[in-house]
Image (cartoon, rainbow, N blue to C red; front, side):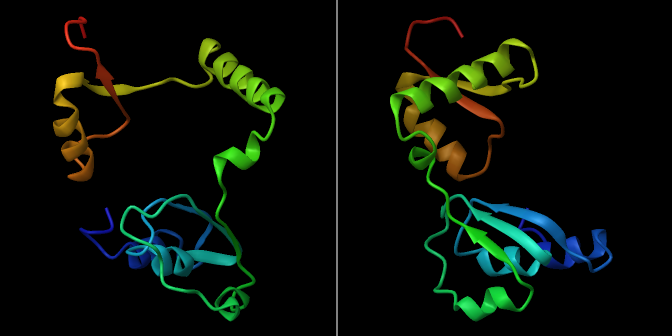
Length: 139
């Protein structure tokens, strides 16, 4: 809830100033520097997106201050071949079938309300998975 409280201060309170091992940041510009500040020495930051915009340029020396690791993975690099894709998809579906992973669909919208679904996502009115259902299909 980075718009409602200073998340860096809150993380420092929770961890007694030690910081966290890993930050997964999907927001980007608005949280990037704060996410780095939340890390402990030798912490890992995984930048997964930039919904608030592209983060400012980061000098390499900023990572050296705490020997931090920074990654900006791209899903397609983890499934370069059809075989890799089938293997990882198989692992995913096996985890779902065995209930290791539970998919939580919190909200469904008829396809005709796709614009509303996007607006609700942008306004943070949703959590979990949001699914569009073809019009006329029971939800």
